[in-house]
Every structure is written in structure tokens, then in C-alpha cells.
Image 1: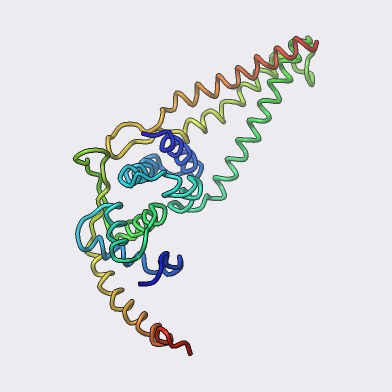
Image 2 (image 1 turned 180 degrees about the vertical axis):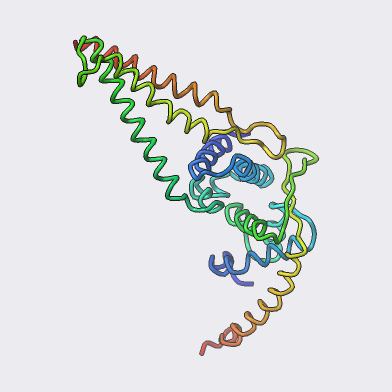
Length: 114
Length: 166
């Protein structure tokens, strides 16, 4: 595993799709999404990075949100994937894999710089 | 709520209002920040960056019209302050100003204060908290009161200065 943090431009490229994928797994909220991304090895994603991504996904109609009261403490904003969000994810996941495989094909293997 | 969160809330609401964001949307953005830091225990500035930068990252750039009207209000407020101070000095010295009685100049100054007060009252519509339905900010009446008291205090100070210098 590479040392954190990942370059910001890599995260910018991958976050919208990664966040959408996490929301598509199950209805969830911001802090839980950040924890899930961290557990997946993407590093610590600050609120200031995460919520603009969630807001854009919502503006694009890929997720919806609703506030619910917490059992204890403040309410939480839950995000749910929409049908358009699922379709977008399916389409972009295939394209993303193709893209990363092609990019990886250009790179030398680890430990053997060309 | 901690002082850090309180301060951040004020700064964020102000930054979002300056960008002409609807009160409901402001409430949503503020609640997201507060809900998140309540779970992580972080300081909002550390988690979300300076309020002004965060406001810019979650909203559209300010429109040209919004900048023009903001500057026009600042100019109007400056003119209003100038007229009031001239009016006060005129009254104390018993001199007319540009052929107008000093009391009329003072009155025009107060009248010109009305558009900035109305604009601020419009901009300071109460922000609802989506978590509770309650208000996150004071209502419009407080803005009107604060701005009126501010101008009255400015006038009183000018009056005192005029009395001391005449």
C-alpha cells in the first residue's frame, strides 16, 4: 500500500464515482461515507472535500437526500442512490476500468523503471 | 455547541448570504457541517477549511449583478453617513448646506439609509434548520434594529463632536 495521502488530483478524479458507489451499496450519511472511503484505503477525506462531491451528485440527480433525527445527538443527512445514479455508476464503472487499465499499461511495473 | 462551531456558523451564513444563496440551502449546508463535526469531533475550520472558501466550493460564483448592487449599497451608505454628519454640523452651527436647511439634509440622510436597511433585511431572511425546523439565525427585525441603532449612535457621536468643536 502506498503512503498516504494520495495526490489531490487522483482523489478529485476518483471521488465522485467512489462516493456514488458507496451510496449505491446502502443508504448512508456523510461521516459513514468518509469512514468507508478510509477503510477502502483512500485516506482521510475531509468534510470540505466530501460534501461538495455529495452536493454535486445530488444536483445531477444521481442521489437524493433527507434529514433524519439521530438516536442521540444531531440529525443526520442520509443519501440514497437514484435509478439514474445506478445507471450512471454501471456505465462509468466499465469506462473507469478500461481507462485505468490503459493508463496502467503505459506505466513501468513497480521496481523496474524504464 | 462549542464557540468554534458558533463562530464558524456565523461566518458560513454570512459568506453564503453574500453569494445570494437561498435561506433553505444555507440551512442545509450549515447543518451538514455541524452534523459532520459533531460525529468526528473536529473543529469545523479544520474539517471544512475557511468558511468563505467552503461557501465558494458549494455554490455558484457570485453574479455580476450581485456585485454591482452590493457596491451600490456601500456607496449609498457612505453618502448617507456623509449627509447625516453634514446635517448635524449644520444644525449645531445654525448654517444651511448648499441652500438647504440642515434639518432637511439630515432627513435626506436618514431616508437614504432605508434602501440599505431593506436590502440587508431581505438578505437576512431567517435560515431554517433542516434538522429541527427551528431558526438557525436571528430574524430580520434584529437587522433593522441593529442598523437603525448604528446610525443613531453615529449621529449622536457626530452631534457630540460638533458641540465640542463649535
